[in-house]
Image (spheres, rainbow, N blue to C red):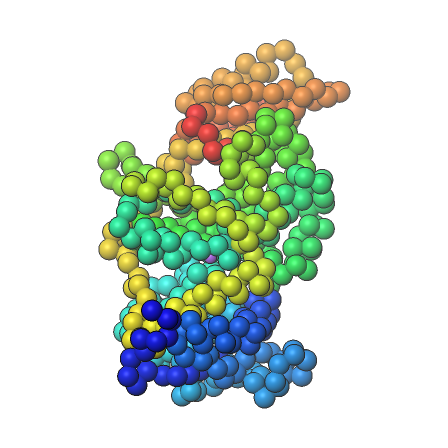
Length: 442
Ligand SMILES: NC(=O)C1=CN([C@@H]2O[C@H](COP(=O)(O)OP(=O)(O)OC[C@H]3O[C@@H](n4cnc5c(N)ncnc54)[C@H](O)[C@@H]3O)[C@@H](O)[C@H]2O)C=CC1
Ligand SMILES: N[C@@H](CC=O)C(=O)O
Ligand code: NA
């Protein structure tokens, strides 16, 4: 069957599209709608017609018909001839209000806004369900990489156990540059901004908020529960140093900002969700270790499917616009053929496990006084907290010694208490770095 030939009687021959925001992503969305118009029409069975583009500055030249530009996104969303709204503004308000209005008025919405979804998917999905329209957000997690749709649709008959990986392009770009070329942290961050990877406020990237928002979205979908950003334990990369990367290399490891969502069984035998984001050492032999630059990768483990890996460009205007446009085609086809995409699924309602109970491994770097017996005293502190040591490396200095300890797996709370105790020991002059270690089974 040729796409578009089975159109129902009375189906629209054109669909009005409003684009909210013409930044890194919005500009590429507009370009694709314009350049690929013929192919999109054939795939959808109706033409996509750009009704307007909401921008802040009407005077700035943007290479499109100026009559399409408006600085009133609310009026654009309400237009009767708009069927699909693409929100690529970023931030919570006004996108939340604009999307809710669009949905209530029977328009389908495609958004790349993870910060918004990690907080308000519930209310927006309800508005979409009530109006029988679509809310699609593939671009919100890992840019171009199809991961939302595989989890929501392809794996809908399986039981997902774990979704873990690198879902922030900016931090991966910075860490890769620091590890591979010894680049300076601030320079690498500025370059990520220039390349269109970083958020408008890059604190969201470097402090892990963006990755945590994505983890909340992934955990909600994978485990059929509602997980918000506040449920995700979060640490960013701003305290990762060149020294950490160098000593990780000595353990045949590198450092990556990981987002980990998994089912864990509590002491009471009940299943819970652990959702967490932190920089961690992973072995150089681990598949995620070779993911560099703004590339992302997500590893999904499901009971029957086994292990699946998704890899590709996680940030940048064109890659993200590709994911947006995939959703636009889905939403448009649904308008033409009277279909609709999957509804939000939260029936399992699994609770979230606090980080203190989650088993993790630590890498602790500290400066210790150079004196006989210090190593034993420090090892004793780990033992006191029930934490066993997997490896120790001692690096000498004139009057101080740098000691690096890698532990076996223990409840995160016990590891954190051990670090607090170390900080108060007379033999330890400073705990200079605490990272977790993942990708091993010890
Ligand atoms: N850049 C990337 O690699 C990715 C971005 N995203 C998400 O896509 C969205 C857009 O990101 P970017 O295009 O990178 O951001 P951007 O900052 O480059 O673009 C946003 C544009 O919206 C405009 N804008 C903001 N508020 C407005 C308002 N009230 N009225 C009119 N215009 C307004 C800004 O002036 C700006 O031009 C964000 O939610 C972001 O998190 C998602 C995946 C990847
Ligand atoms: N700032 C984000 C953009 C994509 O989601 C990132 O760096 O990954
Ligand atoms: Na994606």
